[in-house]
Amino acid sequence: MKRRTGQDQSITRHWRPATQAVRGGTARSEFGETSEALFLTSGYAYDCAGDAAARFAGEQAGMTYSRLQNPTVEMLEQRIALLEGAEACRTMATGMAAMTAALLCQLESGDHIVAGRAAFGSCRWLTDTLLPKFGIETTIVDARDADQFADATKANTKLYFFETPANPTMDVVDLRAVCGMARERGVRTLVDNAFATPALQRPMEYGADITAYSATKMMDGQGRVLAGAVCGTEDFITNTLLPFTRNTGPTLSAFNAWVVLKGLETLDLRIRRQSENALKVGTFLEGRVPQILHPGLASHPQHTLAMSQMDMAGCIFAIILDGGRTQAHGLLDALRLIDISNNIGDSRSLMTHPSSTTHAGLAEEKRVEMGVTEGMLRLNVGLEDPQDLIDDLDQALRTVGL
Ligand SMILES: *Cc1c(COP(=O)(O)O)cnc(C)c1O
Image (cartoon, rainbow, N blue to C red; front, side, top):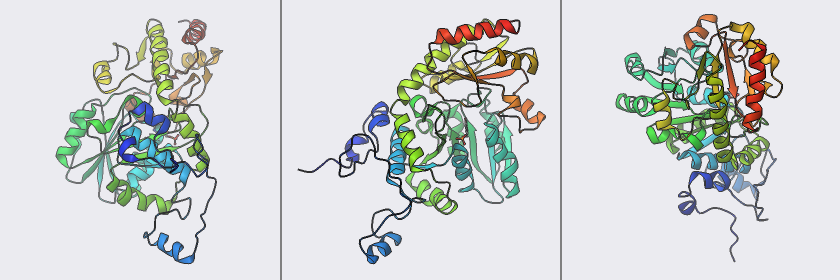
């Protein structure tokens, strides 16, 4: 009897996302283990010299070196591709390695890109500082206004790059409108989908060409490892991304891939519960703070758009206090349960002051342009009982006079 070691893609392709998150990409060894095996190996042995030569020539299937292939890493890549509904995926050591590779693999001197103003601080460093060093010009636009992408497009524009929802202002980008305009103009789209993950939002269904992830966030989801991923067509991944990554080496370790595989098994459960909790905490805060930026609340100016392209609003949002840095730091220092931490996508509730942490590396005027003010605090709502989080925030708000 044949053992079920591999998966029959003609069957597995049709599984729904929650099933993919648990089983997609599983390749069993001869031992038939139920949980994915962890292959901690840098190299592979060949039966004969001719096999080694054939593998290097691409004439024989098989692995050659873990910078290029690893069975545990490949399981994760297939699982993410299946979840995303993408033809292919490659993982990277971190989210920033994924963003850097996704940009540099396809751009060259003389190219132009259009990028959203609100972005993870290091993504803004890539577009504003790194790319210009190589002769690649960036125009920054307010991505909430889809027309700004069209207006900024030039003859040499190759790419639109944005996050939605964006860190930390929760700007929402109209995926259908912006990806549609890109297609019409022969421009590619690269969407940083870290906040929503494919469990809540699948940009490719709206015409996005490439999605990129910090898998450190919701995909691991328990604050353990760093990881990144890029998804796209088989042609883009094989012929554009792979030549760059195979030779520059931002490879994900097998151990970290294995941890993310375990994280994905509970992604759907976690992100839905955390979204529910974030809505409860956000509803409480709405009556207590001057401003809240939460796409799941009707008060968010892009609430209708957000809910038309996301299944749920996710677990991250921001509040803005009137008392600047002093009041914001005061509130953080009064917390007893929620941790002061700049990570997100964790099962623990975490809170940070972006302008003095995640976005501190940017010039003051860039922070103002992005909407990152001194009174802003970003909250990642975890899996704790939301009433305990509300109680903690209630006493911390009272400490700072709110
Ligand atoms: C965290 C994050 C990144 C960077 O990911 P790392 O895994 O920390 O390198 C990029 N984009 C967004 C939206 C993020 O939240």
